[in-house]
Image (cartoon, rainbow, N blue to C red; front, side, top):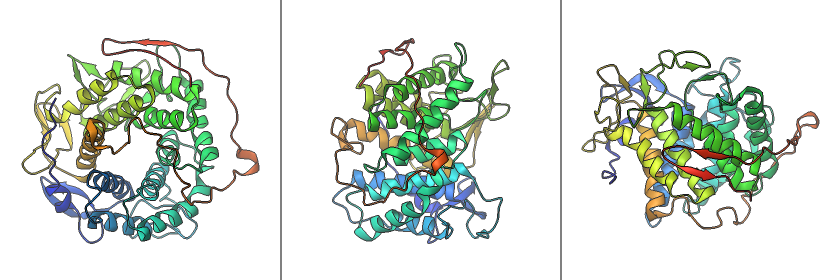
Length: 388
């Protein structure tokens, strides 16, 4: 599959001096929808990846805009709020999903060697304030999102292990032979959990994380395939264990997250089949879906928000666009432009300069017994799990 040309036109349409606007009515930015930490942290990760694609270019204004936005939504105690302009004392703005994404984005900035020193220093300061909260995260998505960032930091081995252990523990409580997942229901942003564990496995060389990552990724591939194409779990009903799987509406972020999970799986296993799977999932945007309708317009750079019965949802908001572009840049990376430095010692770098806080006394990482090695067999891939 050949990737279409990269277009950032719609990204620039949605981004103003404050940040990226959350929603769009058709392709027109909906300023009433405001700005969120969720979208601007995703946008910051994308800006770092774009910077890596163009290492000789000057720092992009996008990078500056999204760094400044995250700084504006961080409370004095280090927690990131999701809603711009919200009262820092609001007890309802405590989204762990958003907090984890902001940690991930800050870690990407700190590790971006081509970012200006002032931006890396800002990312470092935000991480310094935020990381103590990572020891108290409870939700699997919050842990996974934060883990995607912590695993990038050479000095964050303890917090990386703690977050990964929480995911492994959730898997141990929920999974059985037929249901290989962290929860009794499949909902949204599913690829991020195995992706985070692959990243932790590469960072810490721990077979437990590797095995759970491969088992859960294989499960996602199995239950999200229909007529040979990627078919994300529908948001109108989700998929509970023992229930019926919802087909519609299929959300754009699922294709991107799964494609990125497969790319991180390749980074650990070096099994080329995972790159094929990443392209297969990404093809959902280009017409490889149940309706055989493209959701991405290469001329304008827009990406439709969802696939509904009979047609796409024609709104083109930030989440769908960023999911497409994050997966696109990740695929460009493995095709030779070195975003992920495939085959290089990614974590053999100088320290991040972030002082990693110790866990509270009752929340130190706990050990788990290793899983037995397994073989995952699918039509797409046959991978024997390797131990480091």
